[in-house]
Length: 140
Image (cartoon, rainbow, N blue to C red; front, side, top):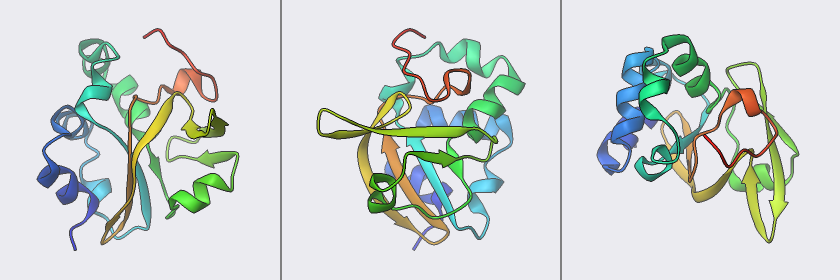
């Protein structure tokens, strides 16, 4: 079984995320022993934000990507049983049921419980933005 970073690389739909992780110096964090839960925005999710603005501000890039990493293993059932999830960035994600689908901050789950040797991946349809922690923002 591959670790989180290798799993993302093999998938092929996370090229923007992988490039951003490398630039932010967070690749190694996703190789560590874990357990880690990683909310991974796919390439389509990055089309909803200004990627150039994000990657040109290293502090903003690091804080944004750290907001997708949780230092514990949380499966879909665990997500459904909580209202908030604390992230590596020190901020919390808000979990809510929205028209029968679970929404975490401003993103819906696309795929869940992708098992990795050091944790799990949940694919999301939007990039979490820490400055809007707990609040949905359709702009950006």
